[in-house]
Image (cartoon, rainbow, N blue to C red):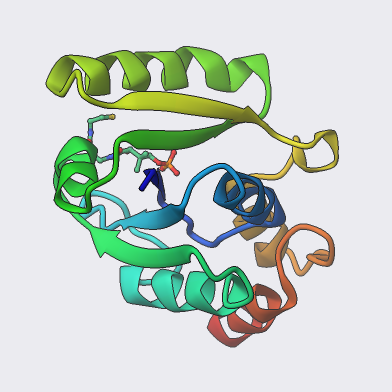
Amino acid sequence: MRVAVYPGSFDPITNGHLDIIRRASKLYDRLIVGVLNNMNKKPMFTAEERKRLIDEVTEDIPNVTCDVFSGLLVDFAKNNGATVIVKGLRTVADFEYEFQMALLNKALNPEFETMFLMTDTKYSYISSSMVKEVAKYNGELNGLVPQQVISKIKEKM
Ligand code: PNS
């Protein structure tokens, strides 16, 4: 059974993330979305809230589950029986950072491969930080994040 992990902060999950999840779920038997509980950042949503939103928007994809993790990604992947780390690439600006993380993860545990999926062009400009920026100034969020996320952002603001 091929198990992959798709890690990230997902604060909040965007339509770009969801597109990567849908596409990756077709490539592996099981896809685990790993939500990083990063103590150094001050997120808009708690890790549990982020997980709940991901559970809601992926409920129609049977082989996708979501879990919160802290610590090293390679440990989370290993503990869940995954052999692949899935990452999305939007523009060349993402490449340097993602390449460094892939090499570091390989150095930490050579058993893992990082697989990159190119974002669909229609999502290439979307990021969680941009979504929060637009939300802060009451901008239009339709098309950037799923409807469930829009409602939760409105509750927060
Ligand atoms: O959505 P993000 O914030 O770009 O995701 C970054 C993430 C969660 C993939 C990365 O920070 C991560 O894997 N953190 C876990 C700690 C770790 O394993 N660090 C070493 C590899 S970067």
